[in-house]
Length: 619
Image (tube, rainbow, N blue to C red; front, top):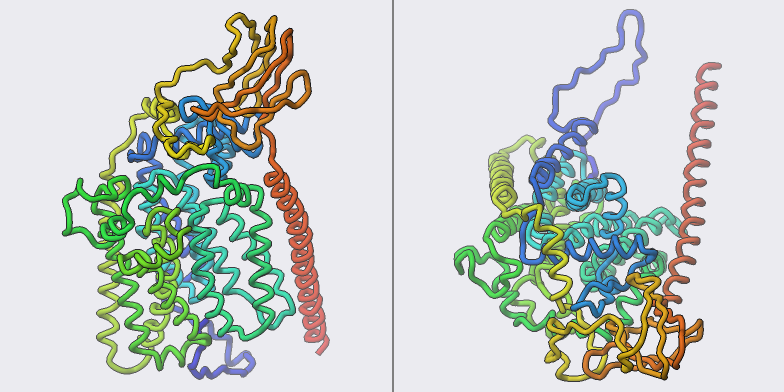
């Protein structure tokens, strides 16, 4: 993105015996070659991952046991035959829960894959934390390199590695589903910014953008929703840059194709959410308090005070967020004060305006100023916290850093007083050291979960938690039903003299034989959520609802019968599966076509080089 304005004189004199070729010996430059840059990034990431790598366990937080329970049950349901796990039976006092209809599944699939490698739950959980951090480094550098020089990109990527966005999601919320969304956000924006308006349809950019958005939706639905909101101003700003109808068609097709790829999770998560009263839980805390107590509150309260106790129970994150934002604002002011030179050195200065505006929007959405926006857009309230925008402050903030570093680098080569710019460089370096120090304190002084408590606490929380408890009955006082002290049997009948033989009992399928001399009513200790079906001797039967608990109730005839209870796909889930399968086939065809284009291009380039070499040899 940098346009060189220096005049260079290239000698065309051919070497002779009297004037041998003179090889210019260049001095050493820090991060001057690709290998050095890669090693530098890996070392920084390893430092950032240090507590996870060398610690005996995982960080302790209010929600760690919930996430451990989720990952354990996902793995259990997966190996029981639910390749797309949607229902877990060991939740809400044993009544079950469709939790994976709402929790993005990608990180859980990563855990199943990693656990196959390590065969150690604790080690697998650790690498579930480390993998998103490594991916953020890789995709972050790829995205930043699109906007700046190698050195500037690597320096800005260092801020990504030690950013507050990474560490609040890893060490404060104790589960990396928010963190794993960051690299795919980088990938999505990289695809958008790589659009080639000279092509009729930019296949490469289309594949990158759609894949990035699909993986983002499968990583963290809240981040994907915020991206859709921010994509509205970003779309119009990009349209000013490209000024072509091709971009409009490409943009909506990319997002639509990403939705299609992820629809097996995305559509049920959105369309079946009405059965679960999440809004009553997620917005029960005053939004103003969450917003007011989020940003720069180091001096406002004691370490253990504050309304949002579940997230902000220490000050280190707030300080690191302030340091990162201070660096970004310094670089932003530097770019604005040197706008004339920005137009001179950069081919597309509009991208700096885009990054600046998106940074400011994301920054303001984390402050009390944005309260009215949160109240107007009701779906925003279901994502629970304004700190969701930290991801986007990071994404657009580091782009500003890249452009500022490249601008200062160009200015330093000019022959006039550059003392002020050196001060900016030293101040930025000093602030980065402070950021590293604060994150060091945050990481290495965190409490750790005793290893022996991992499984014990994870199992106990699955019985008591009702965070996503569904209100099946429609009772406005549904919360008054105390399921925690409900110890009714898994299978219950109105006839006390029945004989039950269980043949199969999985999370999504139960099979048993039941004998009763007279017709009777059977109650299953499982919520009647859409998708459950009961078959008596292979014939589907009508299911009623227990008006008090929402459990399944059905009539059974007298005699001996085989009963199968199975959690199956609803029409919404079936359609979403077909859409994702069809989109995957199209994706593979497009990918094959793109790889064929690359191969053909390489063959043509080799032939041209070979012909040119032969012509030079003949001459």
